[in-house]
Picture: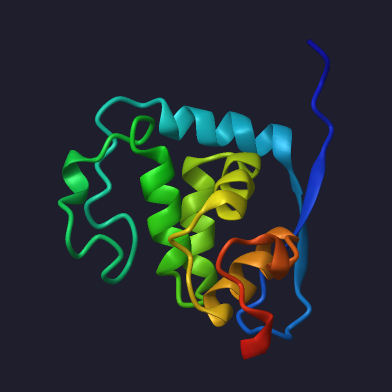
Amino acid sequence: MGRLSSQVILNTGHGPDTGIFRIFDIERTMKKSHNIASSKGKNLKGYFPGPVFWDVDPSVLDVEKDKIFIIERVLSRNMGDPQYFELLERLYPISDIVRCAKKSEQICGNSSIRAVAKRYGIRPDHMKNYNPSFG
């Protein structure tokens, strides 16, 4: 198996037009996230700030089995806060997050979609619920 050399440029600024970017090495991230995600008994209670899992007990979620649910939930309720993205990126490889974001029907509202799209270099119109007529 060859070395994965893909890189992703992420917007890590605290506002939509800060222009602060970081080159993200996917291989390093996958190794780091694999260590966290594969640890048995990872308790998500209190891991994400705010009411991301207000209707679910996060302590019963399995980081691997509930991966799609967790990614969709965090991406749909991040309110544009980079802290949510950073915590999610510690759990999962960027490639998994991007794949889930593109397929998700849970990420709604153009502002949320634009925040996710900007962070991960996705065109908003490539996401399921983006509505160009709402600007």
